Image 1 (spheres, one colour):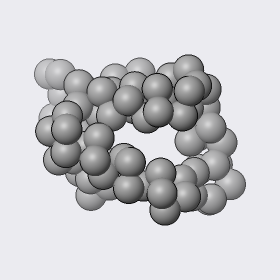
Image 2: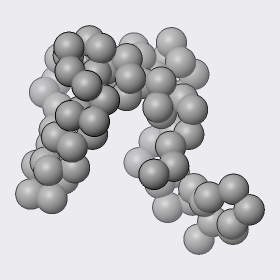
Image 3: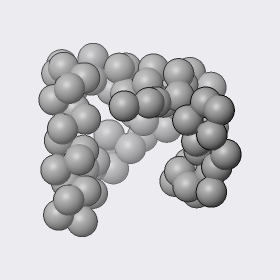
Length: 75
């Protein structure tokens, strides 16, 4: 699985904040997505916004389809 460094830092920070492993956090996010449910409550979204600022993560959902593996063109 490829993740940009800022996204990974935000996820690691959130996992630490929630006192859980990074793997458990990612698995929970994916399971929520599989059921078209939001994985985060408003308070957690506030924490994520702060972590994104701290780690310089400017990526958003709109960027998801533009990202590509190193050496590949985005679609």
